Length: 219
Ligand code: NI
Image 1 (cartoon, helix red, strand yellow):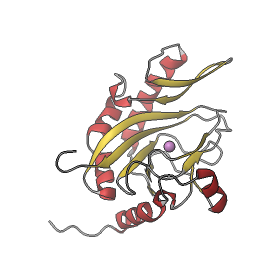
Image 2 (cartoon, rainbow, N blue to C red):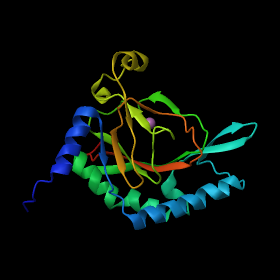
Image 3 (spheres, rainbow, N blue to C red):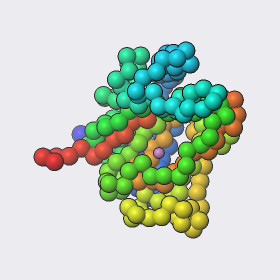
């Protein structure tokens, strides 16, 4: 079948290859967004009541525990829609547009509570060549500079595995990546990135699924 070229897809693929990230605007529809928010609430609220599971990753402090990640999201009983996203459909299609046949490997919810510090500069993985491992983040709320959106060094996914992050940060400019609720941020797992403090009073959550290029034949 011959399909018409889609300039938006071509440009996102070009961005991912050259810069290490791309934003697919408005890819998550309103109904799905509402459902994902509702089930995120069903996970976050019980945590506030004292529900603790090994997959609830939190900071401990004198003022109490602060949830920052629900790991293995697809295994949580409340997370039916997230499990569906992990297994098939929207995110798989987008990931395949970006890097070809893929398999989903990790699913988590990232929670940025009001007045919580950001995430330091890091790379998620360097044990894969560029453009063979990507993280897709579905934003359930707007991410702004004020509530700690992702910040990245464009092109840093192409740097060697042992590139010094502090040195690169000094030598190269970084860019903020604000997104709207329902947008999907795609970034190469090798990209140097961070997120700022959530200085305001808004909760910000995203569902993140890692995809790697599907292997053909035995590993
Ligand atoms: Ni990261």
